[in-house]
Image (cartoon, rainbow, N blue to C red):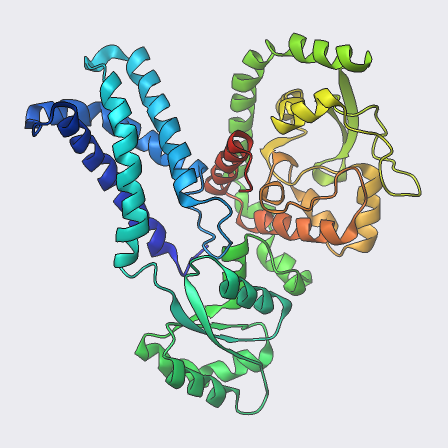
Length: 449
């Protein structure tokens, strides 16, 4: 997946590493109000270097390297940064407490470092980073009229600190389209031309625009940019040819068994200690309404096979997803169930499903057989999502927040499918790790990813 705005993330990453290091030097200086010697500085750099790697991961979880620059920032930078650095300092304190190998116990230093690093990294991101010009939006000319093109235009027009500014939108016409685009390029001097190359009128005009490449103009396929920015497949383009080109299990012969091995290892590693929580959770569920602590739910898995998925009970009963004529569950979420869902504790029994091979950690969320039967009739290519194992978490759970819970909703499920198709097309260990870390972030700080 190629991003037009990738240099931003790289510069942010390198700048953060520099200011992590500079903050350490400043903290040593402020602790004694004297310039730290090279020997003192290096004695701290070596152990802190291990922490820097972990801290970058915390920044990633906090969304400070969010690649979807076009999406409106939902959390203030200063708040996200303060939370991330506070977590980092706690990690550092635990690191030096449990690993006294380095011979330093920087208690006061860590407090100074929390304040210093927060201020310096905030200064870097708010003041210095825009100075390099990567924060400044570039003009873009957009050629197309599809639904996805309209979403890109709306996103760029309303986004906080958008990477590109829409200078002109040109409707595809069969006559003189190349001359219209050429005139817009001459007038607005854009860096990007975002074109719907799946529109035959646009692709036919492209040969006449080839010479503009020599002027440094970048031509971006709107469909690829749409996927890169929004993290979902453009549904208007999904047909038999799109499925044949982009969805293939044979292309993941190495990835699939490796992912399976990681799933089993992680499920055992997390599942065995989690057994200590079971008596407390079971007692809390029983105490509220004297009901059963577990539910076994029928779900559609890989290949369309139905399996039993296990969860701690969070509702007043178990309707198995048969919602009746109303299409909406008549059950209610219990008080204990609401808490279990907020922290995803109700899903611990599903680790057994992962070990059995019914589920993976990352993949499309499984649906009930009744809902699958409805959606396969109403939504084209819905069954494609069953080519792979369903998962505990996935892109749709992270980025789509109008997910129908305990009800049938065709429109919302179409949007969920666009995220599932994106995952099917791009699935990799890197994407799985990204979804996993962002799921942890969403659980810990209760924010949209």
